[in-house]
Image (cartoon, rainbow, N blue to C red; front, side):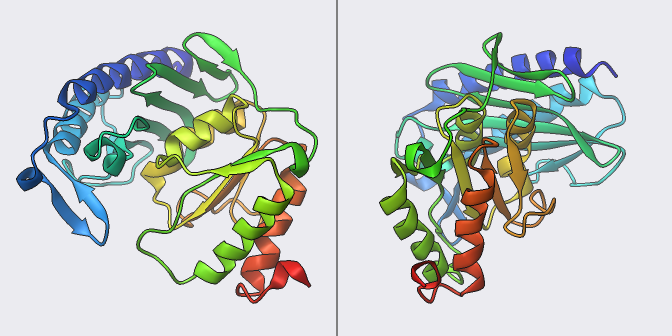
Length: 272
């Protein structure tokens, strides 16, 4: 397959789905909202958006399988697999807050080969493919070149159902509050990664993530010249439920802060 051509086609499909999301904004009634698990919400909008994506992406890659959030199709692994989040930032969407996105990626032979994140409200289409660089609305993007944590703006996602590492997480927040330009929590990991890829954020970290939350954004950051690891500094970020992404200049120090806190179990490890 031609990854560039496929990425551009997938970006158009994501943008089309984004227009559907925008059309439904403010239309969902309380009775139409389900709670899948603690603080994990879904509505007919998520399900319809996913069905649209599956139907169109299947045509781009005949014989492909899917890994999706809303289980509109059976999740199966294969040599060619789409990883889809039809609405990353569902809570923002339902509360009519302006940060939510469509996120998708294609995995071929076990490797991510293209990623797309479409931020709906600003109509920004981020896309990348293996070896081809990363782009936003046709313009090539790059991670920032800010040289240290003191000059950096950091993104994260607050724990909202898995509180096993709350103390360690709060230790990290404390450190970054005191040693960076600030911390932001937008409510869409896919957008956080897209913004890291284009230099708006210098780094992003979060735990309890799902592959469909981050797969598209991973490709963006890597193709934009950034670094993506798990909390151990390894490559288990897609299915390991934890991620650190940043520009290359702060990568080592950024990861070190997170490792020190989580290894110490949040017992003031960063202040020793």
